[in-house]
Image (cartoon, rainbow, N blue to C red; front, side, top):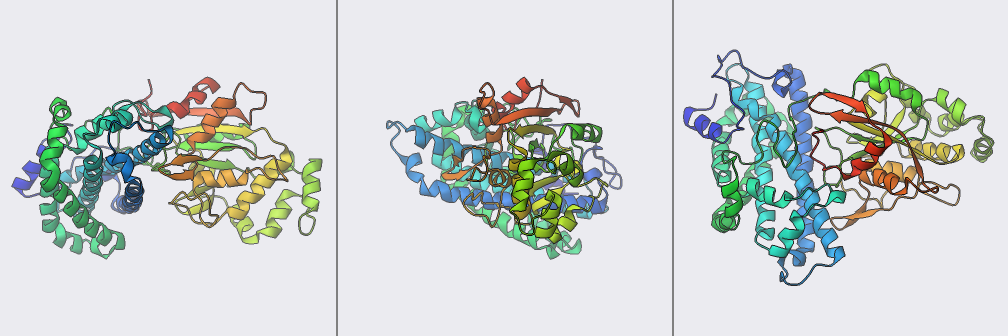
Length: 532
């Protein structure tokens, strides 16, 4: 375990959830749903995935800081000059993206906090990985959080704008005030310096466990040192000023032992979120399989997993979009007998008679991959852009999540067949972590759906506008649901409702939601996932 002085210091700033009595060193006490309950191999796999996420978040925050530098004049201007609507949009989308990264890093940090319960003698690998991810997330939060706080804190008009509720960006009221309470806190320097000291003590263990042979782990150690240097510099140079300006909020903070929201549930600003649920989607497999009978090729899915948000940095409750393409057997029913589909297929090379024949001839390797069942034995039915790239997936991956919405474009079968063909063409391309909608070489999840259904001379498509997020044009998945809601009462609406499975975090379950409930989901706070 930690040396006694360091252990006391760590526990002084630990989550206020009561720790058990010191367990026997050979019998660590962990919750059944904790990441530490995983077998060693599965634990390391999860740690590597979270390490990859942490790296992406760090890169995303650096890119965001670069965007902030380009618009620095908005932050430093005289506060008696009103912001224009366009300037407010830039400020709010930037803040929403920043708080998104901040909160996601907190999930990683809390997921591994129980490294304190992992004895070094018998659980050395889990102890070392746990500390590395905990402190890596903390130093990233502090370096970027204190930098942002230094730029924004004490600017009256700006603070009012950032604190107002902004539902289209997933921001509840007083988000900025709560950020200050957590980021600009007297306990930050204590935990930062304690962790830095322990990192040096732990280096021999990192070597003996082989962690130093992992490239990303070496990167994280370097990142920790760099971020700690930045955070220490901010604290030494600006700490008294920052703390003084935020003093009233900090003094009101009842969780004085916390650096960031670390209550039994991640705290009010992120919702009643339990960060230790690993690999247990709220939607049950039976619910997913039952939904398949209501699906049609060409349906648009929006999905959310509370603990793995694919579009970190983009605003809104729904972080992920997918294209449901169905199976070749489905195509026989929906496409092969349609005269317009037949006419379109005759214009394709070799004049194929069916959509399956066309795709098999045009993309033989992709077709072979699509015909291979997934690891659960299910037929592949979905094309989605995930971290591995634009991929074929089955219902267990694409639909067994925490929240799932299904919308159906009001288009002719030939338009949907063309959309599926476009998606096949894009399959295999890398994921776009920069959210660049003007390049086809890499694609974010919404970009796949957007470009599959983009209107053209040949097809009506689905018209959905790109939006400005932190100075760039992109498309959060939330926009599909907002489009559905805004057009719902119009005879010209583009999307119809199919289904909504609404997660219930408290009950560890999901329930069938109606169209009224689904229409409101785009307004939900992104991190407030506790349902009444």
